[in-house]
Image 1 (cartoon, one colour):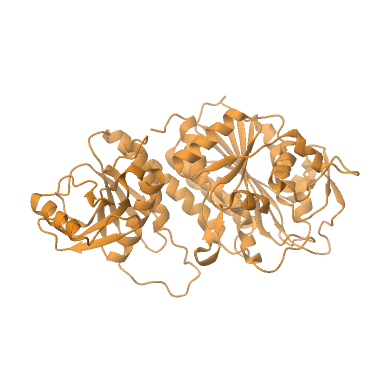
Image 2: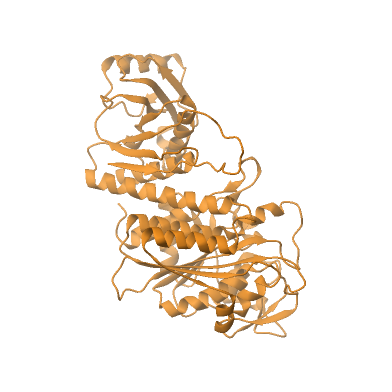
Length: 508
């Protein structure tokens, strides 16, 4: 089976395929793993002359198998190809999910520099404790797609370099052809969903506006024959979404409420609803942020990007589920009409909110979106938001913060994250923290002070999610990277797709 995966640096997509037999067929480069004991992880199908050559290479110490190392060999005896890439796997006893993903990522990065137009990866044949062959294929395809991704559309000069066009994943006899093909399709779809989320996140704020997000959602809907509705300011005013609209008051750009329905399940089946925070640029409003690093506030719509990326993956896989995606999208700017600290607004739920800090704006748009979700009678709702700097302090950029009013839902999401390698960590949602949101003038304040800032933000949202099973994913620390690798990560698309794959019984 051959599947195309888009690489923005190429005119044509990289083709992914499954290869069951050994390297009897010609390949531009074969990729095999070496453990730190200088043990060949898989030499399936290699001839005796090739094996002997590799043993000599390993015996001389040219490749010690340490994780992250590579060695490119040319003119290997009896090998039906120009190159053989050895990838260090580290210690065999410590080789698990994280090490497997890292090895695939290392291999793809090295392949990009070889000049080979096609390659066969044998890493997918290496056993990973407690993980199936299907998991190995799915992860390899997703990681390869992620590694091949490039965002250079605003660069006037692009690298003129020979590119990888075909990538085959070698498998053993322990997995059936149909399962292997399904796993490859799932990995490819996850990769495409992540790429979409990353591209939307990486776009500058003068391009990716609320209207641009709405257009992007409509394009996904048109491509996959989905139902899409965009609510404008007047319609939101008529509904009573004054909390959401208060955030948009300082911007010249009109707000949008984006709703997309994917109907892959039974007609009477309740949908899973995903809500994504879509602040396309966040200055903090009147509570202005410091200037340093403010450019990264274009990433404040990564929650929206991730739910649209998840929708894309679900549509590609045609999962048997009903899914509704809601994206409240505004730009948070200072201005003469902007909300002021101390202003009081009435949310769609009828609850009043004292805005003590205009930079705590994400929860103000999400609360109305959560109330809006009630009309779809959801089986469960998951919101995704770059919500609090406090979550970054608590968990760094490793784990997404998870809050839920349903322990079973929380367990599903935690397991999906572990399986995907896109981990989350559950934090408390106790009533004790609600005390911090008290207001002398309204039903609640929009901030609860510095202590437990990510928890009180989730507690605020929980007041609008009492009528359904609900979870909140705070991705402030995981949605993008700073520094030399600055850019959107596409998290938690993989977590969410794995969650939906498990719900539909499609995860093996």
